[in-house]
Amino acid sequence: MLKIFEKGGKLAFLHSTVDAFETFLRVPGTVARKGAHVRDSIDLKRIMIIAVLAVAPAALFGMWNVGYQHSLAVGEHCNLFQNFWFGFLKVLPLYIVSYVVGLAIEFASAQIRGEEVNEGYLMSGMLIPMIVPVDIPLWMLAIAVAFAVLIGKEVFGGTGMNIVNPALLTRAFLFFSYPNEMSGSNCWIAFRKGEAAVDGFTGATPLALAQDGLQNASAQYGTSFWDLFLGTVPGSVGETSVIAILLGAFILLWTGIASWKIMVSSVAGALLVGWLGQIAGVTDLPCYYHLVMGGFAFGAVFMATDPVTAAQTETGKWIYGFLIGALCVTVRLFNPGYAEGMMLAILMGNITAPLIDHCVVSVKISRRAKRINIA
Image (cartoon, rainbow, N blue to C red; front, side, top):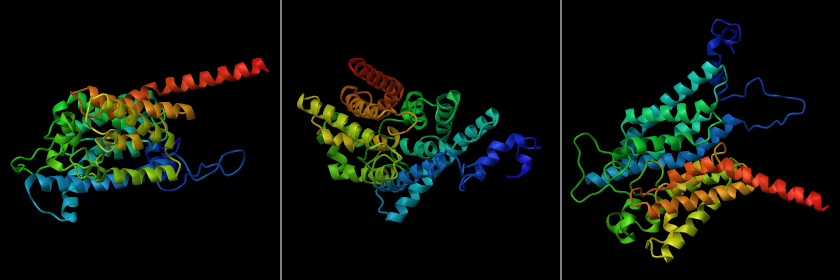
């Protein structure tokens, strides 16, 4: 690194920013090479890069689906590239706003605190455009990102200190501040200026339609389980394709970045509550449909498994994941004003994760003390 940016140099106040760019793709010179230290190729930067690669399939499919849904809405017949290009141009501004606003705050906060710039926002910036409607006004997105990074992350000390997922906090801010832009049937389909949907077309998501019954959900889209699994339905940019999400899950599990316990227990909790609701006559929707509708799969793979805000104990991960899956479907079944439930479920899980870990550790300490006393 240039000495002018080091401590005592004329531009030492820019040390954090310069260091972040210098170490983005190469190993920093401060890595321990001898002594009693753990030495491997995994650090925060590499973890974030792997996570971004894992979410890429869902992002690419989402861009294509944005174009595909537009073609259906206006009655056009477009090829694969045309659909993808339309979606790419619509989604790109969301990514620009997400990263420019979020990283600007991250860099400024690091400079003010005199600390290194952490790479935690690499993943958050990638996730935020994927969990919002494609036509969300950019100024709203900018305000929401600023709120999430400042209030949900930096005030707690930055990466590794936040208690809730910043990407989900962005979505929650938008949902409660601008509900008309985050729900209904008009926000999920992107149009060019002056375009209008063909007669009889509605952009409501299958999850919203399913509140009136499975038959209603299938009326427009022919939403069989395979249609939902593939993801060719309206919804947030990156949440529709379970196939693309599973590809990301495979990468995260293969590299050991995410916890399979949280994923599996989330599915178990959703299936149990969905099955109970079905046999109780609350809904005619088969319990397994909840796994492919809305943002459940995306949340269970990429957000519930956030290592900062999730439970840390092994037993706690089972409880934490089960709570998220069960609460998600409970909200879907019993809250008619909010078709989705994954956002609220994960935020509630984030808040209760420390309590879950505390209870797990306390129980283990008590059991160990009893064994010692007995001996």
